[in-house]
Every structure is written in C-alpha cells, then in structure tokens.
Image 1 (cartoon, rainbow, N blue to C red):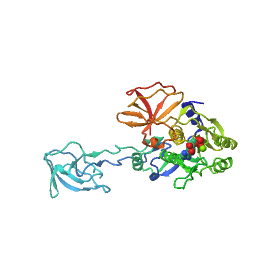
Image 2 (image 1 turned 180 degrees about the vertical axis):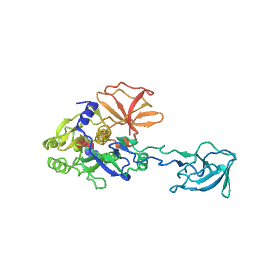
Image 3 (image 1 turned 30 degrees about the vertical axis):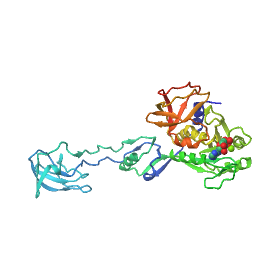
Image 4 (image 1 turned 120 degrees about the vertical axis):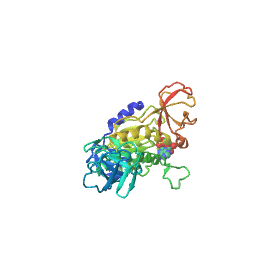
Length: 388
Ligand code: AMP
Ligand code: MG
C-alpha cells in the first residue's frame, strides 16, 4: 500500500499535457489558455474623452470659449483647436489636437455656441491617455483558466481565436450487476448507478469532456465489451470491482487487455482500492465503488490528473486551513478524508463517515484531511481541509 502523495506522484508520472487547439473567443471561457497571447493593438488607440463635455486647451472658472465642432465616439472632430475654442465631446470620442482637458458639461454654462466655465470646475483632465490600458504586444500569460474578465480583455486586444488545451476525454465505466441507470426501474436487488453521474459532473466542472459508457456487468465478457468502447479516451475511469471480492474483476480483465499497472492500493480512507496504470493509448484509474469513496477519489486524484492534462501543472487538490468547531478522535494508520461542515465558526466532521452515505457528502462543504496516526484534536485547533 502506498501513501496518497506517492499515489499522486505516480499518477502525475502517467499523465501528460494534451495538445493545443484554437477555438473562437466566444467558446474560450473556462478553457485553459495554452500559450501566451499578445495584444494586436493599442488601447485606447487615441487619447479619448472619459466624460461628456467640452474639449479645451486650458480650463479655469470664468473662461469662455466658442464651440467650433463636435467629436463623437466613432467619428472624431477633424482639425485642431486653439485658445478660445472648444469642441463638444462625448465619452469614448477622440480628443481633438490642441485640447488638453475635457470640462464636463455640468461645469459649464452654455449660451448658443458660447460656453463659460463655472466655478464648479472639478479636478482632473477627464482624458484617457493613448495606450493606457494596454499596448500592442502586451501579453496575457499562459497557462490560466480563462475567466469572463480575461475574455473581455482578449476581445479588446482583437484576439478572435484563442489557443487552448484540448479538453481531456474521459470514459466513465460503472461496473456491477446490481446497477441500473437513473430513471430505469431497478429490480429488488438493484440500486441506481450514482458514481458515474457525480464524476461526470465533477469532470465537466473542471474542464474535461466526460463520456458515460454502458454499465459493465460483473463478468469478464461484459467488462471486455465495455472496455472495447473506450475509443480515443485520454483517461478511462472504472468504478467498482476494484477490491478483492469474488466479483471484483476489473484489474484482472484490464491486465488481460494490456494494463501496465502502476499501483493498486492506497493508504487512505475512504478509497483504499485505488488502481492506476496505462491501458493502450489511455491512462486508467480504477476507483472503488462505494459512492463516497468514488467522489472523494475524484477530488483527490482525478481532478489533479485532469489539471496536469490541461497543462495547469502537477499539484494536489487545494487545501485550506480552518479551526475545528468540534473535537476529533485519534486517526488510524491511513490518511482520512472526513466529510465536514464548513461554517464561519470553523469545520466540523460529521458523526457518520460511512463511505456509502451520499446524503452526508451532499451536506459537506469539504473534507478534513487527517494525516496517518494524527492524534486526537481539540476544538479550536487548526486543521487542513479540501474545500468542494
Ligand atoms: P465494489 O467496489 O464493486 O465492491 O462496490 C462497492 C459498493 O459500491 C457496492 O455497494 C456497490 O453496489 C456500490 N457501487 C459500485 N459502483 C457503484 C456506482 N456506479 N454507483 C453507486 N454505487 C456503486
Ligand atoms: Mg461491484
């Protein structure tokens, strides 16, 4: 049995960053920018008015000007102004040559084509300097997960197609004769496959492209048939059949089909029978079937692997620190990921930690991480947790 961090290292050794593809800007949010991109222009491309008002060479209360023309956003005043002249100007319009200040319209009195600056004159020149947002060649650096804010910036840089890492294709396989799909009518001894759906949602959320394969029965023939549908997946995730029960055939069948196994067991709770290796062109991870184990392993192992594939680097799931709102007993020999309520007062592990209880997972805000043999902890002590 290996430790969680050893298992992660071995997973990282198996995972590779995927190639780049170009996507239209409108499709790029949430994708990983795979190489830095450069602004294709200066912004603003001219000194621009920040307000509606009058462009003048100099301003002081009492000064009067003749309005000689207009500069609007999208159509500038062609010409320059001299002392005593003003140009009516609007937000976003180019500031005419010769003007140094935009006096906002609230600070002038107008009479026909004459304006006079009142003694309300406010501070500032109300001009956005040429190129003060960014210059041609300024970069947006990679890798990064593109936010809506990044998309706005890329748009104004006139970048219409964006280089992003291809989404990892993940094939999800539930195994077990007892499983049926949500919406189906289960037999007396059957339950609904939940893990593949939870993992599908998690994978979507972190930028992968998951695909549900048919449920495999607990027979070699059925497992082989479903493995045969894996196609061009970058990662194959099996769920269940990974321990040592009579019906746990996943490792056996995968090995007969060419799996080069990297490890099989990890010293953690929940999730001990975790398996990984390479199967043909894909990486494979075999998860335990217990619903909470599968989801915890999804957060602790699969999400970091997906981040490597996306080019975001090899790092364990993010952890935060918090104080314990209630005491914890001593931990055993395996690293324990305890479902916990996360509140402003601190974190509090649920009483019931059985790995079949999805109702409690749904209430949890994260997983308190207990190192192997961690002694009992008092309320008020600081612990680490993995937030959901
Ligand atoms: P196994 O690892 O196949 O021995 O499964 C352990 C437990 O998890 C059993 O109670 C299974 O019924 C349950 N289980 C396995 N796969 C799934 C799944 N995809 N969804 C929900 N429960 C599952
Ligand atoms: Mg099973």
